[in-house]
View 1 (tube, rainbow, N blue to C red):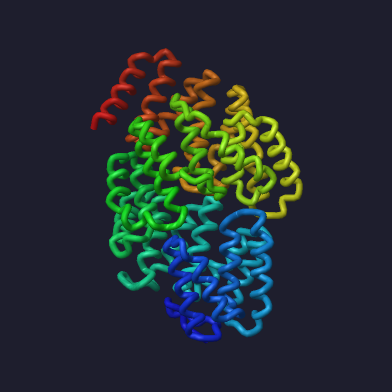
View 2: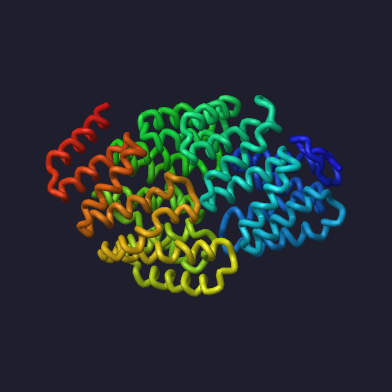
Length: 460
């Protein structure tokens, strides 16, 4: 047995193998580009490195791509060969991986949480539970999972900043913005390269409608996170969101072309960033030229995957926006066929939310806004189940408002927008849409007041 860098006993043939594994952990937590290199070195130093095979399987699962599913299973099988000589904690990691490979996100998350009860310093279990709570839409569990582990970490020690960054994000997603801001800024002060903590603070500014402060935050911290892996694209997307709220559309398109969509990545998060931004721009009346086609080309290849409903719905939007209705119809048919079994956690989400939301997307782009509204409205409090952040799922809230406006349901649109501006009083776009809804109701003076408020926000 060797001790890893966080003081947990692990099975390894040599200190060298354990040290390479430590570097894998650090690289993963820091979203570094050299994570795979260190994993190869760890397994080269000890081909039977149990946790090396487990984490390799986890990494394949994190990509959410069918081509890598078999590789995840192979990694689990390789780890299983050595399961008789490892600790109970390590065996729980294998059981978690096997559950995830079977598509049971509830079971694998329960395994990681079980590990954390006895071993709150198992930062790998903590980070993976964080991920699966996130893509289950369970914000409270994501927050509380980290809160339970926090006392095992001393401020300033290696790794503690990453834990605080995770906690900051959980706090933010639960609407505890002041606490999230303090925790996230503290984490970044300890470790300027902690892109997850930077991103947690970015979410606080987004949800609070503080666009100028958000831009300044990302500019001030850029040197620390710019060299991270493709998660940087998501952070650039956050910066573009701020500029969008300030109606700085040329800057949004520049960031799209030069930063977060400069490479035609196949990664589902990269595609989701791009889809969500193009939809916002077009909804605001901004032409996006041929940018949809590249995304639709990627989406066409992934219409039968259904590994992550969050990704599926963004693929559906790309197909609809590019005018590829036949491909989208085939995707919806594939969804219906898939949910007939409901074997996996994501297939259950597809049945409860995903397939209907994809139909709503189809209706919206066909101009049948009344149908889109009928499909979306009963699901508005259930869309959370697809996972993603409040900011990422906001596209579906905006789609609902658009459907209400374009189907002439101005009173409903006004009600939804009053709810929205109460939560995000700094959203210029929301105040302008509220004015549109009020105009539709014939309330010209109220509409003018809403527009004045939007103008004051822009001028501030």
